[in-house]
Length: 289
Image (cartoon, rainbow, N blue to C red; front, side, top):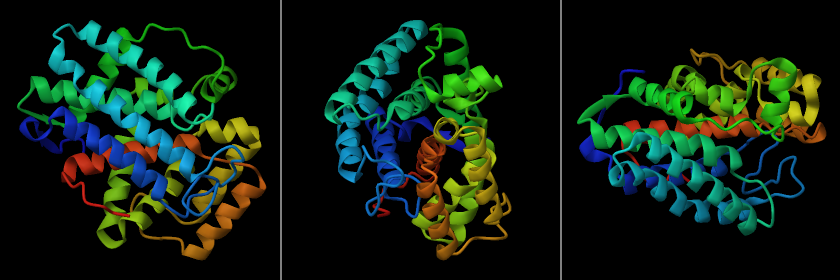
């Protein structure tokens, strides 16, 4: 999977931005989705709904393009990352303004931002590159230029303080290995036999079972995180995809997450990144909804 070949001539900035936007939409449309917002449910959220997410996604269309055009307008790598960081902060504020101070996509502004930036950076500099180049470029950007100290405000920061690892920052600094090594191969295997929505839903549950989702920890602490991973694992997800849960089992899982006020937002972000890479490989932006 790491050595899937990509041709730069097919990956111009507006197209990469389009894939990012489509990925957010497809993640939102995925259901059932335990504890998360969908078209038919607000999940475990009292302050979020489908419309708020759509408003946020519409706003972020401009952000993805602003990020992906940076490598084409600058030769200085440090300046590229500095401008990307400034754009991230700017659009984080715009997102909160557009959603009435609801944090819909803060994690993805960072994680999808650095992913799309890395793809665009490679597309501008190489005629052909591979998935492992994307992961390596993400690691390069973050480990060399990400100098800011972590503010102790996010669920991921609190989790790291207690457990010394975890959260989107740790995953990003490692080049998103969970996505490249686990969820993307799993999704592609699922999508061979299932609809796009079913493959997305099952991949989300698979991600919950293998990650230490800091959003789950923030809402349910260690007990909630263990419960979520145990329930998702019991549904029979495996990398080989030999066993798949039925819709009834997923519905029960959704109810249990709502009852316990659990929401796997970190896993949902990783699902969006997984979908992005899938669309990047397949070069397919048809409407899956």
